[in-house]
Length: 133
Ligand SMILES: [Zn+2]
Picture 1: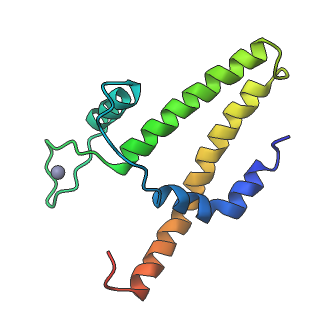
Picture 2: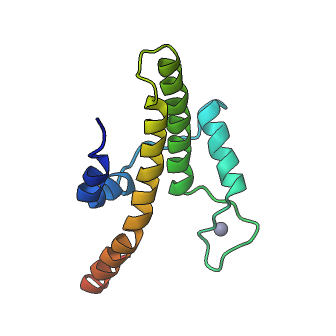
Picture 3: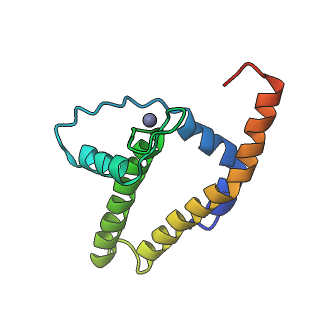
């Protein structure tokens, strides 16, 4: 059923990356200590990033990667639980949960493989427009 996903990712890798890279979702930390904010703060503390120059070792600054990782972690957890519940109830055929799991792992690996291409694309863009960031 989903065997064509890898070629879909391959054909659309640039669009997929820019879709998330350019997404400007409203980021508000007024979440009233719900699970999104709790995980986000956990990731900011556990994976400290500093944007200062020079970098400060004591800084743990909020970064887009924390936000996207929080979204992905929560979504993936939900996908694992919901799919397994449906499979246990025989609403999904046996093995569906493992297929979904493999899709998520393969998707992550497809993103990893795209990294050198995206890096090259950015370098080409910078040499064409030297005044951009
Ligand atoms: Zn800093």
